[in-house]
Length: 349
Image 1 (tube, rainbow, N blue to C red):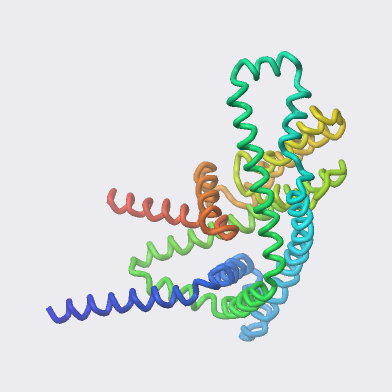
Image 2: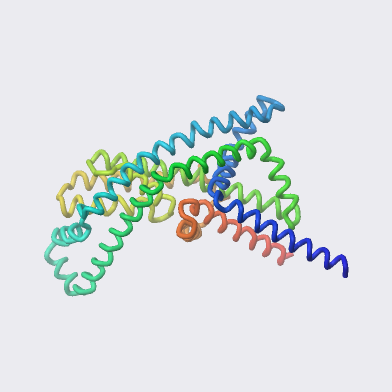
């Protein structure tokens, strides 16, 4: 009886101190998460440096951190600064009502053939008008929200610097002591060695697939779309390219949510069939093929989740956790499927 009471008391103490520790780390969970993600992504490079430098693990970790800064952090910081500037411009235009979504929709309707307009009126003119008003309000609120968030992020420089410093500080120790940390986590999990190994391996595989594969594909698709927008003279090409990169994280729909309406507007309203058809050609012939060509070698068939699971988990993660949710959402979904897969195997045994 005494052993059972002491065991329950120790388990309760363990839960309480774990919750308290996580609560202390919660304000900087993003910095901790991205430090762990970068350590996982660049672990092959760290292993290669260890082979060349031998026992000098501190030097190898410092070199790995410097390489991460040059390859990932500095370019993303410069892009973010440019996005903040363009986001501020979009926000100011939305505030001054220069971007009239209702007028654009009216222009698109007027460009339709008479038979199409009559059909729309017969199907439900009042309902379509209400839907148009709701769509207009939603688009205006969404554009102001996105631009306002970009403006707020640009002003919150101190918090960004603190989070970046914590991330780089932790990244050094993750590079230097990553193997020992993973070993201790695996040994401390209240699971068998086989289950612990499979779950940790699945976590690392999904992180690599989500960040290394999906982010690279999204950046390529957003870059192509942004260059196409710049070439045909669309204002805020960098911002729209970033939006397409963000949407490219979602399978099936992706960047077409941006370039398809713009191409339709160019052809139907402005009568610029050359720019519209060019944008359609780039969207279908280039952006659409990037996913099919690059996803298998970058992501890998063994670690890829079904598209519907990726879509729902990514959208759900981002709606709850913001931009970090595009990693956490698929990771939770992958661990969910892996855990239930292990449970099914146990039941079958």
